[in-house]
Amino acid sequence: MPNMYDSAYDLEKAIRESEEFKGLKSAFEAVMNDASAKKMFEDFRDTQMELQQKQMQGQEITEEEIEKARGVVELVQQHEAISTLMQEEQRLNQVINEISQIITKPLEELYGSQQG
Image (tube, rainbow, N blue to C red):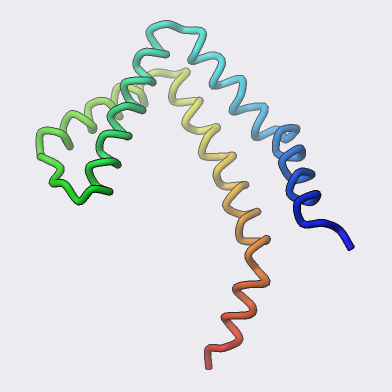
């Protein structure tokens, strides 16, 4: 009987070796090796984190903060290296979401069968 954790580590290895992860890794390194791109990307991440924390704490997000965030997003999308990084991240996230759907199928089937 295969151990679930062994299967999970095999999956981790498969993700590390996947084209999607390799693409993300090289896109990430390209941004980190470019000082201005790195700073822009870090500003973008910080802004995202700030807004997420406020949302989680139920704090009001001001119109000003929304505008600032929109500006930061527009900036990073115009930067080729960061734009590539975000696309690669999306590609890998899609794969991970699909894997997540596959591994939670037993639960969905179990609970889904109770409906009716």
